[in-house]
Structure formats: structure tokens, C-alpha cells
Length: 183
Length: 80
Image (cartoon, rainbow over all chains, first blue to last red; front, side, top):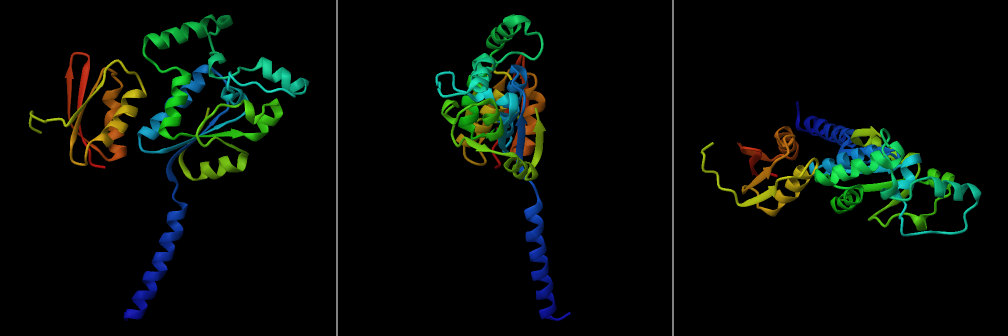
């Protein structure tokens, strides 16, 4: 085999390697947070912050019932239509108002769970959100859910690099992640 | 491993439940240089499986695990 031949093979290998490495997913977690239940949102944030601790990137996509949880209780906006107002009042406004998916018992169960969490030193949802931001967990919000439920960007939480997006953005991230979850 | 591992920094994670021990230790290990050792003290029994999993994934090394009553002590060498 002459030198030229080896060089040709080497450059062929290099281009194949470059193509392959583009296909390898990153050490990343992509999670859809569909649920607006306290328990499932706690689990989502524990997994996301844990992923960052493990050296992974973490992205959370809030859609449907997960969307109202990211509203800021201190902010209010006007100019909504009837349905917008209805969704606005009936859905939780922020982390403080979400309920357990089971054993809520008119709010008693949720209150009990929260006091138990405090007693056992488990971080509250508000603290977990703060920790997620500090660790660099990326949050995406589904634009269609916002529109459907009549939420406006001005009433959502202040969070570093908050991005509004559609399904394509999620799929791009998910295709590029080793771990994908739907919660 | 000899018994006299000396930690360059100690992290008190007692009373913290999942995911805090691993979150704090992943931040804490960056406070020492590569090659240095930290001691993490946890009371979360889940740490016994979580810390080794974290170490394998993040490329750090658990030199020794000690249990003293409810307190689990991990001596972790920063490799990455």
C-alpha cells in the first residue's frame, strides 16, 4: 500500500467519524412536563436538578397542564377573552397552587404533604425552581398551550433563558438527548 | 486504601433528602483542585447507591465509604 492510498483512507475515515459523532446524542435529559400535579412536578424538578448534578444538561418543556404552573402569582394581565379568563381562574397560578394528583381531599392532603415535606427537609417547589435556575436547567414553554389557555408572556415567571417554542424545538432537543421523559 | 485519608474540604449534608446530597456534592467537588479529596457526610440512605452512581458518571472516585450510626461518610477524590 502506498502513502497516497493510506492518506486517502485516513481522510475517508475522518469524514466518516465526523458524520458519526454528529449522530451521537449528548449527555442531556429532555423532559416533557405535561402534568400540573404537585407530585409529578416535584418528581420532574428532582430529576432535572439531579441530571445536572450528574454532569448532564437538562431541558424541561412545559406543556398543557404544566403551563399554568409557570405563571407568576405576583403578576396579572388584563385584556383576556372569556375563555382566557376562565382558564386563568380555574388553573393554578404558580407553584404555590398546585395540588396532589391523589389524596388531595379538598386541599387537606396537599397541605399535609407540604407540611410533611417541610418537616423532612424536602425542598418546596419554589425552592426547586430556584435551584433549577441556579444549576442552569433550561425551561421551554409550549407556545400553543399558552395561546389555547389565553396566557400571556407578561404573566409568566422570571427565569433565566426562558424560551417559548413548539414541538419542533422539543423534538430537536429530544433527538439529541440520551434520556427523554414524559411526565 | 489506608485508613488515614485526609479530606481537603468537608461537606455537611446531614438531614438533606434526595436530590440535595448529590446536587451539593457535584457543586462542592469543584471547590477543590483535581487530585484533592472531599469528605461528604450524608444521612440519606439513598446516598449509598446514589454517590457511586454519581461518581461513575461524573468521572470522580470514591476512595472510602464509612458508616457511623446514621451518618454515611464518603471520601471522594476529584478526578474530573
